[in-house]
Image 1: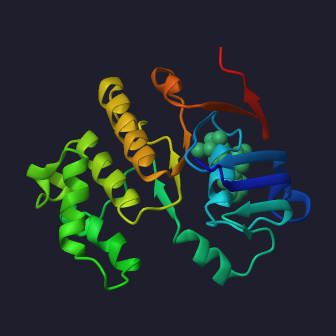
Image 2: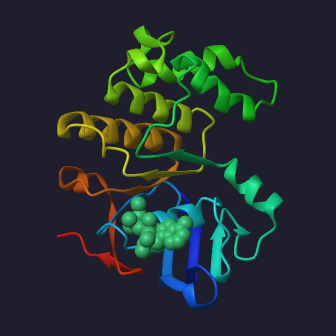
Image 3: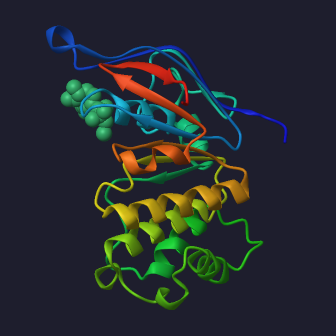
Amino acid sequence: MKQRLVVSIENLNHYYGKGTLRKQVLFDINLKLHSGEVLLMKGPSGSGKTTLLTLIGGLRSAREGSLKVLDQELCGAKTKDLVRVRRDIGYIFQAHNLLESLTARQNVQMSLELHDDGKQDIRATAAEMLEKVGLAERVDYYPDNLSGGQKQRVAIARALASHPKLVLADEPTAALDSVTGRKVVELMRNLAKEQGCTILLVTHDNRIFDIAERTFEMEDGRLFERELS
Ligand code: ADP
Ligand code: MG
């Protein structure tokens, strides 16, 4: 398979606050992610993992250095360019962020509607995605009536339904027990592999370190690649 550069980061710095409150949280980050790779990032709380993920995801503006996502330079980019790149990214967060007033199917449909090209049957595609994550029997359930693992699987179906080129997952197993957490992550990896999409997964969870092809560690705002043993 041809390896395409999905994310390319060079000498990226990031700061929060202004004036005397200005504080640097990312230091000289360099990172290249290719198509189809599964990557894992760990590191202590407060080390800058979420900040880096939100910058890559175009959810926060990068200002210093270079951050290219799917060939778009996000450093100093205009809002409309950030919005465009977001369409090719699937997001999965620690809290599943499902809308409680919508059923599982409607939650997945919502994401598909944002990408609607009129070519697909959104209702059917949503149900199909839920089937793939093992929730065929739960498509019309509201989040309230789903377990933590099931909700996170809906979140995965929602993130992957539109075939994003990149999935950013921020501690997606944090609220799950270890067995469920592992299953959820394996499911996410298998689906992403099927679609050739790149996953960048932030986790503290020791039990899922082996699912990735490359592992990075964030320490006080600096990123190091760890050799696999
Ligand atoms: P992690 O995800 O690894 O726990 P974060 O990226 O959330 O780390 O945070 C990195 C540092 O930036 C921490 O010191 C945190 O307090 C600070 N920080 C995070 N978000 C903000 C923000 N919106 N405004 C100011 N400081 C922030
Ligand atoms: Mg975080």
